[in-house]
Length: 140
Image (cartoon, rainbow, N blue to C red):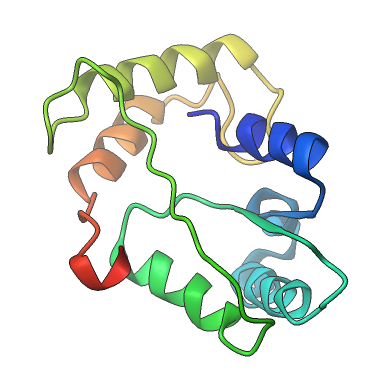
């Protein structure tokens, strides 16, 4: 979808620390806890000008967990970024899903968690798209 590309670019342009969920996948069951702990640690470091969190946030629970991990940190603004295909209508993800699948297949093994030769890739992306929960007013 381009999350890591955007985070890499913003880190280069604006500075800050990039915390990528994929870098914790090798921890298996401890991955989520370790990722959120790192988000909290970086958020609490007042020498970090910007925290870039690289994780899919299609569900309210995902967003809530990240914001909760950041709560004990330094005060600052939060921006949630949602990637959409410009030709998909609100609540629709068909073109975005197709584009993601094409990009993932093209990168082959060039990713830590979702490989281009994954036979269930289409189903994984479809399930993710079906599970998208729109941001609520209290998240904006």
